[in-house]
View 1 (tube, rainbow, N blue to C red):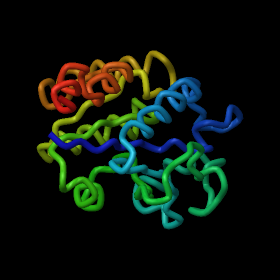
View 2 (tube, one colour):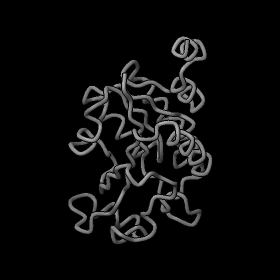
View 3 (spheres, rainbow, N blue to C red):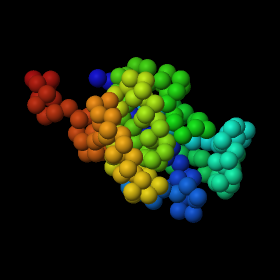
Length: 191
């Protein structure tokens, strides 16, 4: 089964400790995500949360609450902080869920998604729900995600685990191990 790695919103606005949207577990998740990106090279989609300057509907109230995040879509805090291949697509959207027509198109050649990033309790959760609804098998890399708080992270993982078998939770080590050919099958190929 072909898989794509979808890396959700690894951006400065979530990394910077002084940001209103700082995610405390960002550094640990980032280290693991960089390992995953290397293992999935050529099969990675990055997402990027950006603000829609129109603030349609309830987004206006949302940005009233988070006025410090009323930044232009090209402002530095929206930049992706991790190293990525220039050929990897970046899907920039002003919505929590990154699942939709664009991500469906970028992942049309695979049955399964491996999802990681921030925040587990917001953009990761909403993207996973949309992808599962669309019939994708989704693996959430539990230790390559981080929530606004450790408790919120764990609660979101618990909610997503309820969707098994459509959604499964795995650690980075488990995903990387499954991505590597076993010694036995590698030996058979070379014989």
